[in-house]
Length: 210
Length: 210
DNA sequence: ATGATTTCTGCACGATCGGTCAACATTTTT
DNA sequence: AAAAATGTTGACCGATCGTGCAGAAATCAT
Image 1: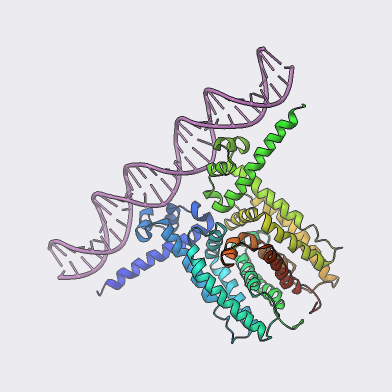
Image 2: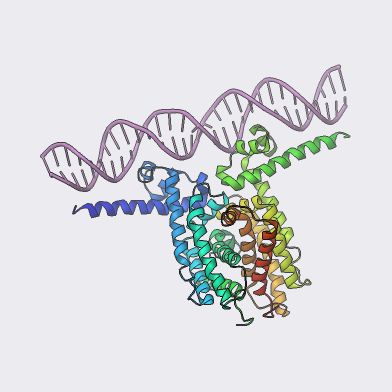
């Protein structure tokens, strides 16, 4: 009992390292192209050890996808009826762009999964994502009814926010190539945030000029 | 000579069918997951015949990616200095969303390629896409200097247009799932177009209310 | 200390992969 | 009609895949 903590800590450290490696390898090679041996090499352990902790490639993949899904869901906590729309949506965009920078591999794994018609996590979409989305749409439409923002399509606003923010993760390589081959600097990330918010929030705000 | 036309027509028909099948299979399974035999099955011909016309999987893939790249490039023909900015950008968004609907597989292949850091078509990015993008940025910045649109970031406006329009292709499955599991109707596609243009173009227009 | 449990690892398997090749069929040229 | 060129196909090869499994190594409980 006294040493159980050490054992658990070790287990958790190894599984965490596997998950980090898997997120990256799944993102860079796709589900089919990501071999267990490559994930193991990325984590610095033998292939058999990966299987020991996650049984199958599919179960490991589901864990990876579930992680980014939970993180994204938490990023929209600010979207509630009582919050100021511009502030709340701005925070959401900010957080989502921060995640695009800090967790780009997770975003890419999700994108790959959706592009391929969610062969493995379709239940996530139908259960959690659907109800989650409907809840946010209700909030945005309430904002509109209360005259706080322009009467736009709440659904397509959400899609636009997802698309633009995740673009900076999924298409990082294209953006880098168009940036003379060098990654965006801190300053450029701030500029990106400002530009995205400026563009999208102006489509939301009631008053023409801020 | 007289019958060369028939021979060529056959060759062209078979290669066209292979390209169509390949675009779909590459999109739905990723580069690694797309096997030549699956492409062949999709095209209704033996595997060897695919290899006969395209030699390697990589060469076939490059042809598929090159096609969608050329189509997208032509879609931005309206972005010139002499055109009206709102009209030109609106046309560009319209065309891009039409392509999202009619050529979703091509968009998905491109997304997959960029997500995986363009291991096969990096030369496209550095040569053609870079200069093409810089040219469009020059046009948009000229519009700004002439006071025709708000002083926004031309680069990030382009990224936003790419992100939102391609989202409707790459994330079709997610959008469908969030649409009670049924594909968007004609009416809903029109609504999508209107919503995207309303949102993005308002961020571009000089006057607050249209 | 010793037995039980957990963790770790190398090996072997059937399946599938991209690509080669020779044989065959068809079409084109002479 | 014969020869040449082009198109088509199934069989085959070495490599890699996911996964099962037995046993070694380490850690735990008593």
